[in-house]
Image 1 (cartoon, rainbow, N blue to C red):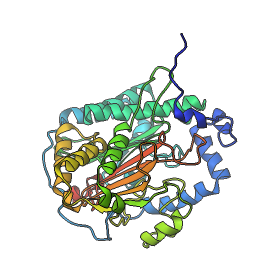
Image 2 (image 1 turned 45 degrees about the vertical axis):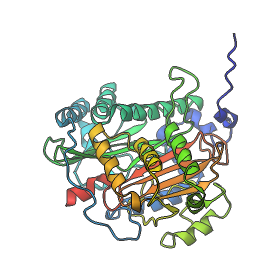
Image 3 (image 1 turned 135 degrees about the vertical axis):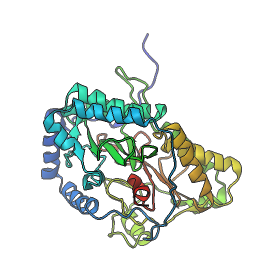
Length: 421
C-alpha cells in the first residue's frame, strides 16, 4: 500500500539542476571552493573580512566594548578526564606522521578561532576527516562521545548525518558528507593542564576547552541543518533543532503583549531595509554588516569573537516562575553538548543573571511563521535563525533551514576568562 505521508516541505525547493548546483555533482571540497571564489565575488569579499577578524587579538563579545570581569568561576565539573585524555591520544595514535603535524597545535594557536560553518573549504587546518582513515574518524567520534553528554553526542552525530543526507540529495558526496569536518587539538591532552580541541565544518562547529583537568567550557558552538530532517534512506526520521524552535516560539507566545512588543524588533523576517536599519541600531559595525548572505540575521557566528552586541528587545527582569522555567528549558537545548554536571552549573549561572537577560525577536510569532530570536545576558548568548536557501532554492527564510549559535560573552569563549584569571 502506498504511503499517505505528505512530502517534507523542503522538497518543494529541491532543484538539483539549478545552475548554482550543477557543478556539485563532479566537485571535490577543494574544487567547489575554487569555483565559488572564481564565480561569486561576494564569497571573496566576505572571506577577506573574516580573515581580518579571526587574526585579531581576542577580547570577547561585549554589549558595549567593555569586558565585565569575574563572571566565570573556576569549578570542578567531574568530567571523566582520564577517558577524555585517552580518547584524544587515540586520535594522535591513529593519525599518520604527516597528519600529526597538522593535528597538534600550540595551546594558544590563533587557528582555534578560524572555525567556520559553511561548506566552503577555505581554512584547511587540522585533519579533515573525509581525507583521513576510518581509524582516525572513529577515534574522533570516540573523543566526542567521551566528552559530550549522551544527548549532546547524539545531536552532534545527527548534524553530520543530515549533512551527509544533503550531499546525497545533491549527489555531491565529496563536498557534503558525514566526515567533511576538520579536527584539531590545541596543547597536549592532559589530566592537569589546560588544553582544547575543535571540530568544525558545514553546520557543526564545536570548540571544547578542558581546564585543569576538571572544568569544561563548550563555546563557541554552531549547529545548523538544511533541511533539518532526513525523510528517506537509512537514517529516516533523524531531526535536529526541533526543540529550539518549539520552545523559542512558545516562550515568545507566552511572553505577554507588553514584552512581546518590546521583543519584536521587526515584524518581517526578511524585510528589504535590514542593512540600513540595522546599521543604525549597531553604529559601531561596518555599514550593512548586521545582515549578510552568509549569516543573515545572526550576529554572533563564526569570526565574531570580538563583536559589540548591544542588548535589544525585552528585559526579562521580573518574569514569572513558569516563564523563567521555560526559558531555562530552552537554554538547556542550546547547551545540550555539555556533560550533565557542567550543564547543570551552566543553567544555574544563566538563572543567576535572569534580571539582566534580554530577549529579542524578528519576524512573526504565529505557528507557521519563520523567525529569529536571541537570548542575551552577561554570561550567555543563544541565537536561533530560520534561513533562506543555500542548497535549496527558497529565497525567503523557511523553517527547515536553521542556524543556531551559543556564545559565552565577556571573554568566556574558548575558556579564555578562566585561563587568564
